[in-house]
Length: 100
Length: 100
Image 1 (cartoon, each protein chain N blue to C red):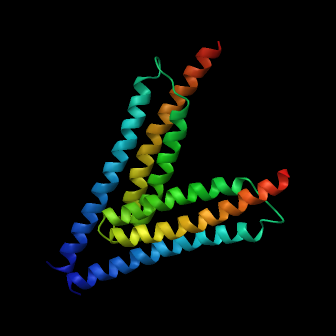
Image 2 (cartoon, each protein chain N blue to C red):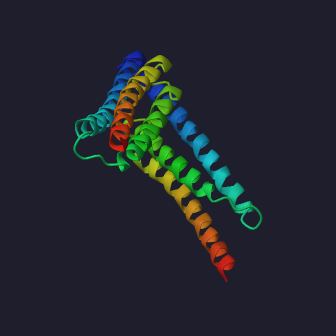
Image 3 (cartoon, rainbow over the protein chains, first blue to last red):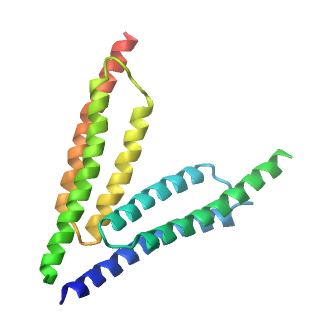
């Protein structure tokens, strides 16, 4: 194997690992979205924030270690952040409805 | 460069990055140890816990991405955990003294 083959292999592996972890967070967001009306769990937000923090540290490490381009790292993170923002907006709306 | 040279280079880079981040947490622990008697800040524990969590995610990623052997990753983490345990013991002792 040449060194550029190896670099490519390691890069693909790293991106796949990050995508796996992003999917887990995505799943958490989906579950909470589905349960908005029925079972609201306030701990969910804290769990999601912690997961997001851990994930951002993973992405940052992958970029610094030269496995993932900075742009790709930012893209993966910001996609998750957008979905999280949609969830939080929905949660806030629900909270306001409960207060009425 | 051969692929084994590249692998070695990436591994060294990854370990150096982890060591850098471990040193930052080490520094936080030291500062809090030095300030035990004078300025106790209860937020410090939360900051350290968060930093430790983020760091453990980095280490885990480095191991999964094939950059760092599992044994090395565990070593770096458990060294930090031991230092953290010493700090928490000292903090508890201080708290007990204050209560007397």
